[in-house]
Image (tube, rainbow, N blue to C red; front, side, top):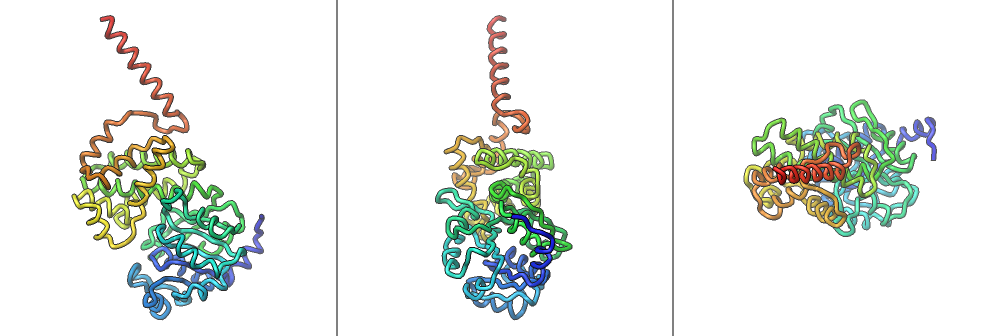
Amino acid sequence: MTVNSQDQQSTSMGLSVAVLGGGSFGTALASIAADNGGEVRQWMRDVELAAEITQEHRNSRYLPDYAINPAVWASSDLKAVLEKAELVFVAIPSKAFRSVLRQALPYLNSDQILVSTTKGIQEEGFKLMSQILEEETGFTHIGVLSGPNLASEIAQKQLTATVVASDDALTRARVQTALGCDYFRVYASNDRYGVELGGALKNIYAIAAGMAAALGMGENTRSMLMTRALAEMSRFAVALGANPLTFIGLAGVGDLIVTCSSSLSRNYRVGYALGEGRTLDEAVEALGQVAEGVNTVSLVCRKASQEGIYMPLAAGLYQVLFKGVPARQMAQLLMQNEQSSDVEFTLPREIVQQQRQGDEKGQGAEEGTV
């Protein structure tokens, strides 16, 4: 489907937008869409929080210093939020994603555009959120929004870019129209699976980066960690059908950099607490919010084992999170893993392994003749 400039121009005036979720990112998106002239309604379970957003234009729980556009109307009534929406952003934590969507189903219709902003994976069936949208609705216009998008910085109107990914041209165009502005730039992709996997996988390595920072590891170490994390992410995603080129973009390396470098990242903060010696329960409790990466670690490790995908960083992090292995000990063990290829899409890992094995055999033969 093609979308001409006249259609984009017409949708920019008064586009009806619904945001499901009262967290920091959903609130920021709602306000941006309202800034762009959209008619915006936001749903959340908490009646008092909804009233605060509507009446005081504040979300004191997640973005206390952010002045929300007064045009955003919030409610705990799903029907009232969804009945006129043309574009629906679903910003619900992964564990509650399907249940909230099922509650919303009676008020959705197939002409609506549904876009997930959730960077997580459902345990049952290893399902990404856009796959859940497809399964539950059967709609045509489905996409994902992902990238290096710390909500607190978006709220400060710092320059930010994101990616809308969909096979559907109308979905990509409408999201760009609804959200694109002078401080929030929306790039397009047709690799929905790769973009969504990138957003989920980088949470794992943000935990590892936080641990490394708490342990006092230097810039060389952190650079190594991020680049090997990128190799591991792309290896896993490509094995499951993603485009490797997606990972050199905003939803891959871009999102990885910000989550592995910023103390504003929830997953980074959990990792930092673990590096300080706290237990996982203590780290999560201190955070007070959902850190999607904790759940993602075990899901990805299980999937990698089933598919035979080499994931040493994820496997090591699993040992720290769930088996009680000290973070520093695991960091030392990771350095003893095999030395393989740098970029596997130019020099396959299997070739390097074969060459090393051949060299070792050759050295053994030479030693036997001395």
